[in-house]
Structures are given as C-alpha cells and as structure tokens.
Amino acid sequence: MMFKLARHILSASILVSSMQSAHAQDQRSLSVVATASMIADMAKNITGDLLDVKTVVPIGGDPHIYEPTPGDAKMIADADLILKNGLTFEGWLNELIEFSGTKANVITVTEGIEPIESQFYKNATDPHAWMDVSKGMTYVRNIKTAIQQLDPEHSPIYERNYEIYMQKLQELDTYIMNRIQEIPMEKRVLITSHDAFQYYGKRYGIRLESVLGTSTDADVQTADIIRLNKVIKESGVPALFIESTINPKILEQLAADNHVSIGGKLYADSIGGEDSPAPSYFDMLKHNTDVIVTALTAPITYQDHKAQNSGNTLYLYAFLGILLVLFLIILIVKFSR
Ligand SMILES: [Zn+2]
Image 1 (tube, rainbow, N blue to C red):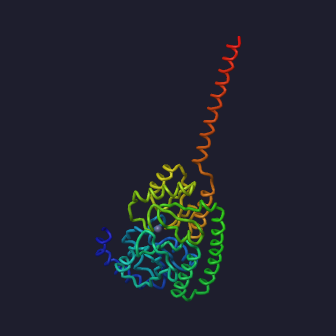
Image 2 (cartoon, rainbow, N blue to C red):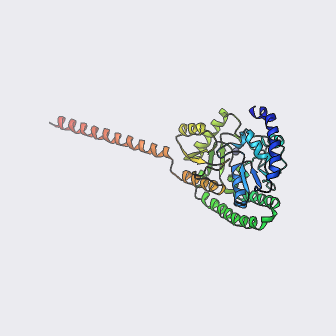
Image 3 (cartoon, protein in one colour):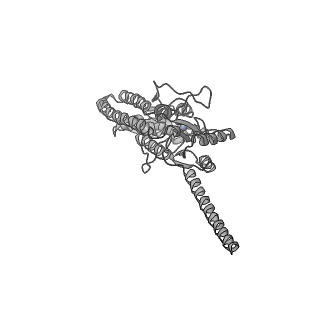
C-alpha cells in the first residue's frame, strides 16, 4: 500500500512541521478535523468562522472504503480536535491516528446513541445514525460540548449557534415525519444501493431494502438480486434510488429488469458539493426526503405503458369486428338476391 510506503518519509516531515507549528500556535486558529463531510458541516454550524474545520474523506468520497493519503496524516497531526462517527464507520482511522502521532482529543460524536445492529454482519453496528435527525441532534450536542472544551473563550457564541441550529434541525425532523406520510402505506419501501437508511426508516416509518449491507466493501450476491426483484414486484414501488457515493450500475439494471424508474440520487455517506442540491447535512436530509416522496407517490410508468398497450389491442379488436360486420353485410346482400 502506498500509504504504508510513504510512512517513513512522512514521519520525518511531520516531526519538522510539528516543531514549526509549535511556534505558529498563537497565530493560527484552532483546527477541528472531522472524518466525514456531514460531521464537518455540523461542526461548522457551531464554530461559524471562529475555528478552522476540515474533512478527511472529501465530498463525494466513500468513507467505508477510504484509503488515507499522506496529506491526511499531516492534517490529523496538526489537528486540535478530531471528530469521528464510530460504530464501525471509519475502519481506517485508528491506523491514521497512530501513524500521525497526533495529540488531539478524539471525540466519538455518536456517544449516547443506541446503535442499530447491522442486518448483514454479525456483531457489527450500523454506523448511519445521522440519517435520523433526532440522532443527528445528539451528534450536534456532542460536537458543541467538545468545541466549547477546546475553545472555552468563545463558549457563549457556540452556545447561541448551537441553539439556532438545533431549532432548524427540530423543524427538519418534523418536516420529514410529515412528508413520508404522503406516501401510500404499501409503497413506503425504499430500495437503495447500500443499507444506509435503517435509522431513517425506523424514525420516519419507511421499510428499507438494499443491494449491499451496511458497508460498501462487498460483492453483490445473486441471492440479493432475487430478493430485490421479489420486493419490487410485491410492493409495487414505482422507483428505486441510486446514491451519490456508489456506482449506480446494479440499481439501473434492477430498475430496467423490473420496468420501474430511478427515482433520483440520494446522499447518504457524504453531503454534496456547493452546486449540488445537498451542500449541507440539513439539505442532504431534506433533499433525500423530497426525492423519495416525489418518486414513491408518482404513478408506475410500467403500468401506464401496459394500459396503453391494452388500449391498442382494443382498437385492433374493434377494427376486426367492423371488418367482420362488413363481410357479413356483403354476404347477406349477395345471397338475398
Ligand atoms: Zn454507508
């Protein structure tokens, strides 16, 4: 692995840079490093411009299978506070922390959250707790406390930012709850690439089915495809959903095979870029909800198509009927002479 090869070269340069940064300590603002983009966005809502907030896994990257770069080791080494999700999300982090030699406090932002067991792997927890906004609010509370401990001088500002942000998240939680109710009960089935929506489904009342498990580092099994074909047929859902961080090929094939549509792109393991519809944690959950509700309340394209076909058949029978009647009239006229 390139990462391991770079290790020795880098330890030397980190030593030099940490000596330099000791001098520069007073001038620079404190550095908060989050593993994933949604956690960094939550932190920015608390810090405003007062602290420097960075992300290890870039926007659009997949945190499950991320391979840290030498630049990440430098970022972690220079950090004053590290925010991680935990719950078996960042398998690469311990090695990176150890290698960087960082002295930063490492905070698990899911502290206090009752995790869902992974349905695909024994003895593993489902890391995607941020998909439930009420649990996302626990993340924000943990982040706020950690930031206040890091920079007590600005504590009242962080407290005020926290209160404003929590109010916004409370409203989002209610919004999602109400919107999911718009979907007819039997169609509240969310079919996606990987199992990232269990917390979302449990909170807002929608059933989940996915091609892959709670991580993305596995191969697709034939049994999973058979299971999903069955779910699509039985539930009559009009749409399946692709994810921003995962190759959409299998989902597109499933949709084509079952004559249903792709309802849109969901953001699960990363927020979107500045020009995307989901540039923040708040926008990511609102956008996902709007996409899901729009697609699952739409008519099934396949059935419309079928209805149109049966309409065409009807015209054909009517045309043949008229021909038969004309033929009979000709016969009657001919024989009545
Ligand atoms: Zn995931």
